[in-house]
Image (tube, rainbow, N blue to C red):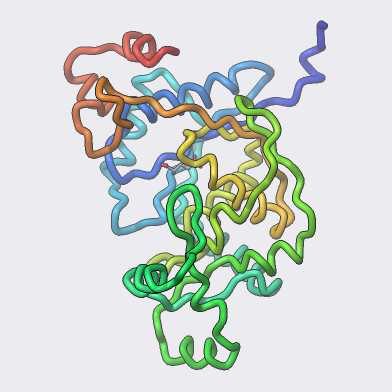
Length: 287
Ligand code: GLU
């Protein structure tokens, strides 16, 4: 049935790469899908640089992102948001979660977590492997205070049980390919929301920024499908809207392996340097 343009909600979508290496064909697929979702009904396409990991992210990879996306023919709004310039926003969100007692400090090292998982008879497992066994969840408040005051390095983890009791029943979320999805936050357990080395985490900053930038349609790979369950919990805790999602299948190479930044031959830069043009690439990735 015909609908007037004004009845449509403009799609606001984004591509949010981390500048830890050169973009590959899988990134091109994601970026083009997100871009195309915005080309009707006065949509908006936003590029966000997810560079909270200040040790691994490099300015030259940010420049390469701009170059690659321009080569692909994409146009994005200015200014580009660099997450490393907005740590105070993520801190403010973490403070809200602290006030709700929905987070706790975690002092465990990686090896302590592995040892604890090995020791446990039936450690909880998620789709991506064993979950945090909850060691620091059981510390008392005075124990936490003493360790924080003594300067012991700590992350902040979501206290999923408390979070769920604060927010009550969770709505389904919607994936464009898979339809309505029942929110199952236990898949990821007590995720890290602020790391020891960085005062936020992917999960916290992505949720804060998607809301801040009014993103209403998130396109990303299926590797982040399970993370969305945790993002719904954070959105509810922080009083933020839930966008619609489109998790697409991941492109693979001739050997059936996912493209990775370390696989240099599939980077957009190297393909460009072999003389390939953007139209050929777009055809090759099936778009
Ligand atoms: N920064 C993430 C990555 O490069 C993508 C995050 C997202 O699309 O939600 O894998």
